[in-house]
Structure formats: C-alpha cells, structure tokens
Image (cartoon, rainbow, N blue to C red; front, side, top):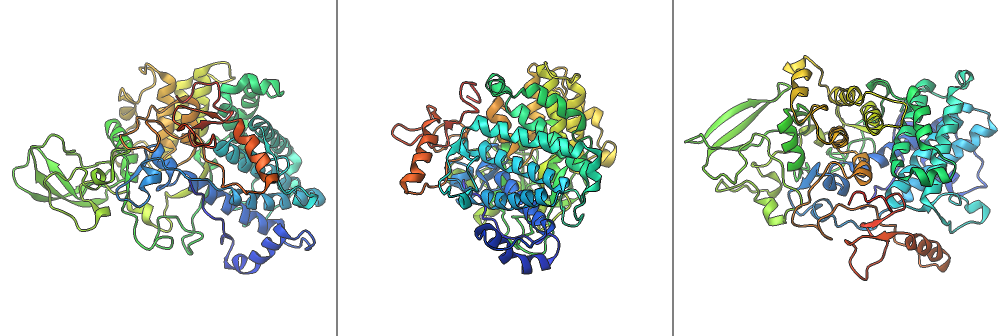
Length: 558
C-alpha cells in the first residue's frame, strides 16, 4: 500500500504555507540552522499532516477500505490494491518527517519549560510510532532521528518494546496534563487545530489512546507483563479521564480551499469525480438489514432499479432518510439473480469484467464504465473538497464506548454493563453522522429491537460489539487493527484475491536501501516475521500475509 506524500498544509492561513515551508525543511536537515520558528507554527504543521496521514490509511480507494469491505472499485483504476489485495511496498518517510518536527517541539518544550507542549509532543510521538508499528511490525524507534549523533542506519526495535514506549509516553503525557498547574502553560489556540489549546481535551485524548493501545495488546498480556507493563491496569487507570461525548472527538476539519487542505475525493485533488469507488455489498446489505440510516449518509440510491412487480419502465423520485431526493428509473425484470434494492453495493473481490457489468442484467448499456446506474454511488459528500460530515478522525468517542463494552464483556477490567456501553457506542456513531433519536423519524428503540442489533440476544456478544464498532469506524484504519486481533467482523473474501481467501495482515516494509549497514537491520527485522500459509513458497517473509509479533501465537485473525 502506498502512503501519501506529506506536504506543508495550510491550517492557520496561507501565510504559514508561504513563509515556513523552507524554514521547517531546514530545521529537519540542518542542525546548524538556528531554531527560530515558534512551536505554535510547527504544531499546526504536525497536526494537519498527522491527521492527513492517518486518514489516508483507511480512506476510500485504499487497500484497507477494500479489505474491510467498506469500498470496492468498479473499474480497473485502483482495483488491484482495493479489490484484490495486491499491496506493494509501504512508505514511512512521511511519518518520520512529522516525527522530526515533533522532536523539535519536544526539545523546545524542555528548554522553554512549557509542560503543555511537552505533553502534546509525547502524545503525538506515541500516536505516530504507534501507527508505524501497527502497520509494519518492528520499525526504527529508539535509534531513529539520531543522524546528528552519527546513527544513519537505525535498528528496527522489537514491536513489544515500541508498544511499551508508546504507553510510557502516553502515561507521562497524562501525568503532565493531569497536573492543575498545566493551565499555567499556554499554546496558541489557533495553532492547535485539534483542540484549540484546551488541555482538558488533550488529556481525554491521551487517556482514550491509552485505552486503545491497552486493548490492542489484549492477546499479549503475558508478554507485556514480562516487560513490566500491566495492560489491564493501564486501561483501568485511563478510563475515568477518557472521551465522554462527541465533543471530545479528536478530529481535524478540511478547509477545502487548496488541494493540501481538501478531502481526497474533491475536485481539487482529482481531475474527475471518483464514481468508480463503490460502496461494498457487505456493508450495504448489513446496513439495509439493520434499517440503519447511516447508509443514507454514505451512499445514494441506484439510478436504475430492477423491480419484480413492474410491468413497464417508469421514472420515480425517491427520498432518503434525510429528505434528499433522487431520480430513479424502474425497470421490470423476472431475473432473480438481480438485486432489486434501491441501494446496491458491489460484491467484494470480483473480477473486473464482473464488476463492470454487475447487476446490469439486460438493461441498457452505459458509456462510462465507472458510472454504472445499476450500482449505488458513494454519496456526493465524498466527492466534495470539504463537507460537514467528512473529517479527519484520529479517534472518536464511539470507539471509547466500544472499548468499554469490550472490556466489560471480556471481564477482568474495572468496567461493567457491556450493553450500556455498546448502546452508547452506537448512539455516538449515529450522532457523529447527524442522526439523533426522534430526528427524521428515526427511533433508536425500534432500531435496537432488531435482533441483528440488540446485545442481549446475540449468541456471540464480542462479535456483536465488534460488528457495530466496524460500522462506526467506516473508512478508518482502526477497524483493520481490530479485525487482526479479534477476527471480527467475520468478513468473507470473494473469488479474486492475489494470495488466497484471506485479508492482509501488515504493510510491506519500504523498498530497502542496498547499503549493507541498512540491510543488516532490515534482515534482522524480517527474520522475526512469521509466514502464514498465504505467503507463497520462495517469497520474502516481508509480506502482507506474514504475522508481526502482535499476532504471533494468538490464532487471530485466522
């Protein structure tokens, strides 16, 4: 999978873009250049690029979105990666570019004695290194960013040591932010595009991340205990100060004024509207079976609908849950192989020819292959430069509630009543997409009575929690991380995948330098990977289907 290349982003105003790009680059590469740029300016750069980089991992038209069956591609554009899991070498240069700037903020916070900036730098360092090890496994960590000390070829630290460091940084940040004296240390509200300089919000973010990473390591409790890390205690100590409402969500908004600060589907970032990106049938059918209004936020009705009861073609106007209207042509059919719903998703992992003709039957041809009228499009908001509900989500309140539900269901944590937390997670996700009880005719009690939604009747309650969490994490990489450690949701791959009927487990390392000093570290890292049966004989262990330490010995996800 390819990660986006990081560029300077306008976040405060166009002035930042025009005056500081060169300065920041010089700070990264020239240790003799005086550090004169305020941490406030650097913070804006770090936050916007962190948000863009993280969002890019699971956004539509990515391998992760395809693997988690949120999207599929209806044409050859992006199909190998998204539909068939042909993931090439990953990229981490952007992460380390951001981390260099985080290090500047951290170093300045120590010399200037600004505890607030110190806490933020620790939080962002944990977030970025956490993401790197989540994606690749062992990565350069303790020796990274040390070129000025003569370390040009960093060793790849053991994944468990990196997770230990991530939790340690977050715990240190919590200590700083929990001190009432933190209010004495100021940062510019306009520079902090995440929380407007509010230390209370930052503290909640820190503790929510502690919960995320504690649960990430649930299958490795014994290994982490041997390192002196009690992940249950970490989780328990964080939950009281974690997110408590959607007002706490860690999100960065798109401005929509330049390509750099716009959503990827908008015309500032693509020359043609991305109609080739389709909602996946797995997600669409599940939302339909739940009568879930989030479907109407994410997709639109087909332009041509098949109907068993029709005898002649006709044109109708349909209205979705939110009052938006759409013109639909009704065509009669007796072909039971066709999907006669107003909302039709593209099945996962089917061949190009089948995808382009899916659900067409004997209907009229269409000129542009990406504009099949027989399959739903993603909602137009995904083709906008900026939009109310399209944000760069780093973490949401709904995730915290689902973490609490999972902890209560598993037992052994200082949390009880999994059903209440499960319901809270669903309500929070609905609210995130502008859906509240009583609005537009939505009744949560009726929704929850659906036997496929309610908690008490579920035969596998952990699966039920993770199912709704997967929906709530629409187009977010976190659902893939959950899938890897739990096997839920129980996604079934289609007929055309690159390496067999399974979902990839990791990103391949960036193409290695051929310098022997680099290769010795790279080879040591890949030697610790564990191949699965989906890695072809004779191929490198540095493969999408190899298990990193986090998954070894867990039997998950397969």
